[in-house]
Image 1 (cartoon, rainbow, N blue to C red):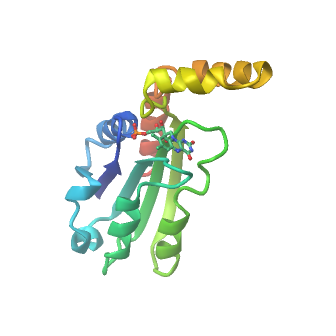
Image 2: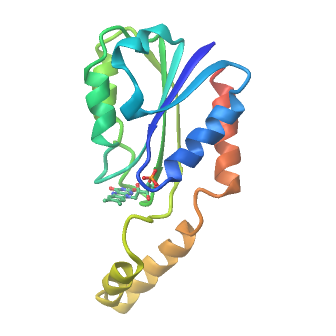
Length: 168
Ligand SMILES: Cc1cc2nc3c(=O)[nH]c(=O)nc-3n(C[C@H](O)[C@H](O)[C@H](O)COP(=O)(O)O)c2cc1C
């Protein structure tokens, strides 16, 4: 199978998942590219395109949506993956991308997500934010931060590999 794994990653979490997926599919004819390096006119030459992104303000990065809007010939299959810090503000991340795909004959054959520690906000700013919260909310936020620490972890990366193997 000719496969493209294309991703956007601001702080490296999604990149680690992308590399795990690429590792799991190493026996295929695979290319691993940053979205900014993808030529949209080549997408139709792949059997499967796997798109990945962190989630920013509930959406995948705009470079992915932009790239998808420039595609003329589509591959038969797409799959998605994302990393996110929230328990609930990520499910619609690929909505705009799906809107593009739904107008084509391509199908979406799989989706994967896992938590990704929010490394985009400086520690001092995070502490300041926590200090401003009432005690109960602060405890909740601190517990959530503990849950995020070091994610994606080895288990997340193993799960990403398992997901990748289901696609071929
Ligand atoms: C500016 C900004 C906005 C974010 N918005 C969301 C969000 O809406 N929902 C969410 O679940 N995570 C959000 N996150 C957390 C990231 O999605 C998460 O840390 C992800 O793993 C980052 O991936 P990356 O390291 O590949 O960039 C946000 C992070 C930043 C820096």
